[in-house]
Image 1 (cartoon, one colour):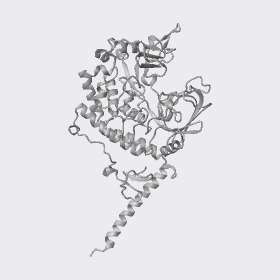
Image 2 (image 1 turned 60 degrees about the vertical axis):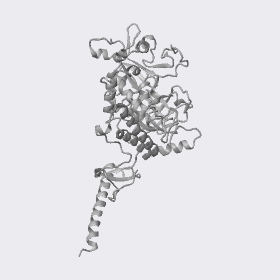
Image 3 (image 1 turned 60 degrees about the horizontal axis):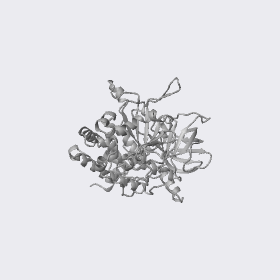
Length: 505
């Protein structure tokens, strides 16, 4: 007759084995990681910037310095110049966005540096995300764009056509300002535009150009004209642009390609000749899928030409391509149904129908709406994107990655507690995890709307919808350090075992 001990003792042995295995993995992890006190540390890099004087809404460049400490404790210290930036952002001086230019010790020349593993450059953006209640919309949207779309030509940066960024915690003159995104800029080097040429007679030969839509450098935008130094131009009623490159050499010869496009290029044939269709289709899909309402008009994107001296009719197609326009997105903080003043949250978001964005497109896409070739390309690109960069699963992972970084590092709690105590506050939510859930649910609906618009049946393509709950497969079962399966979600901060490894949550 079997006794009670015959069942209990084997179970105890199994349990003890699991415990011993877990403890062994724990000790191995500690010994190979350095310090037992720091194995669970999740941190954001800290950036301290210093300059003389008081931070003001329209602060022009002032000399100062930057002190960046990454999560490994490595430090970069450099002289730098700072100024406030952005039209909407200028209303949020309690959490201002800034331009940062790294300089030599005498502040006379640029000093490139590869900050936090990004490309080496001298000009950086400190994006406050003051109207984005989750402080990540712009970054997530650019991550999606960089995954999905590349420049139609080779560059030193793998054809990247958008910014790269890292989240940090910012201190200005020793005062805490919360979570920021340190990012590079859209500029000549990134897009591989041909540098202007200085002639022997002292004149300047303009080659590569970069125009940015939307500007505050001209106050009156009801009729065509330039600002004082011709670095900003109004082409038509409230259609204003600023010259990003070459920023010191404005004038008719520099603006002529853009003027010709808007004034003489309003035909389907012109657009198909002077623009890259896939680049336009990708930009339209980004705006449609993420409902980026503040970008669907004459603002928040760039037009660039690698070399305006090239002939669009050149026999060599490579030369002809150098004369074509490329569109680059910018300022994507109203993505995922966001609002330009941060008013929509907790399940209520901007929800322009996909058909509205398709049928009310700005120039030049407006001249392609009825073109069969373009519409076929648009569907083809969505079919590719929906299973990759635009898939529900891929986008949820991006949102959750930054959510976990903010929460587990303690940065979200530090920032919200700091601004809760202030009279003037940027836009944010206290419960970040709940807000991300709401946005993910919104995107599931948006994804279905995109499929419906393009006539795609999810069942026919074997679609596996992104899961609302974090369901882990058998190979990814999570155990505590005693070998017991963990069923609660989300996980509390601490050490767990999954896939035969000790991991930190």
